Length: 149
Image (cartoon, helix red, strand yellow):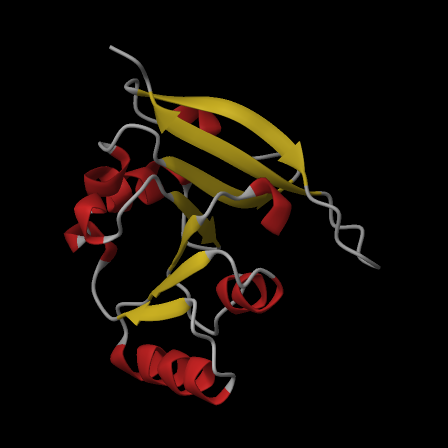
């Protein structure tokens, strides 16, 4: 999935670090932000990136609703895997999605459920197949952006 992402990547609700840590390892040119609100998980992530000496990765221990785009510099790709419904994921990232060019990329299995419930001021820009080596789970990446006024 990393080739489908731009330079600044937020792994929303990073938990155990997937997909953020593998993206950071294989793409040292990308800046990867692991956002995790639970203190114990954030501590695990911090320990992991320190042990792996990932210079392009930062752990942010905060609720996603408190994030603002100016804290990151540049346009963002927000990646969410197992975060919740598309509607709830949008709600959790509204502060970031207000920045022009910022995209929400939700990992889903086919068929994507809940896309019909996204708020009217957002739109599904594209749906891309994700090639998982050795696994045929029919994974897709759904890109959502703020609708142009």
